[in-house]
Image (cartoon, rainbow, N blue to C red; front, top):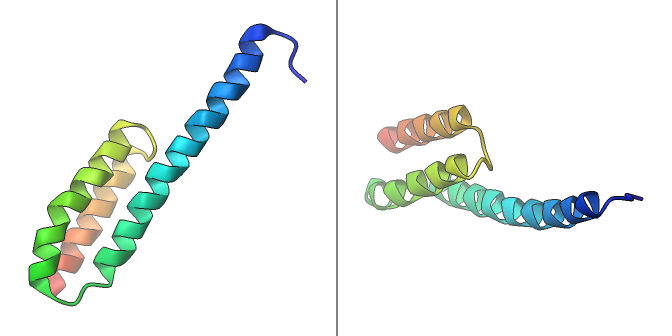
Length: 83
C-alpha cells in the first residue's frame, strides 16, 4: 500500500478518471455499433456529425488517440458512402 499522501490521492483520482474514461469510450463504441447497423443513407447522414463530434471529444479528452479518431471517422464515412 502507498505511504505518501500524494500517492493515496493519485490512486483515488486515477480510479475516478478510469471510470469516467470507460464511460466515454463505451458510449462511443455503442454509437459506432448503432451507426454501422444502419441501412438507410438518410439516417446515416443525420447521425454522422453527432458521432464525429463524440469521437473528436474523446480524442480531445485523451480517451482515444487522435490518429485512432481520424481512422474511425474515415472508416465510418466510407461506410456511409457505401450505403
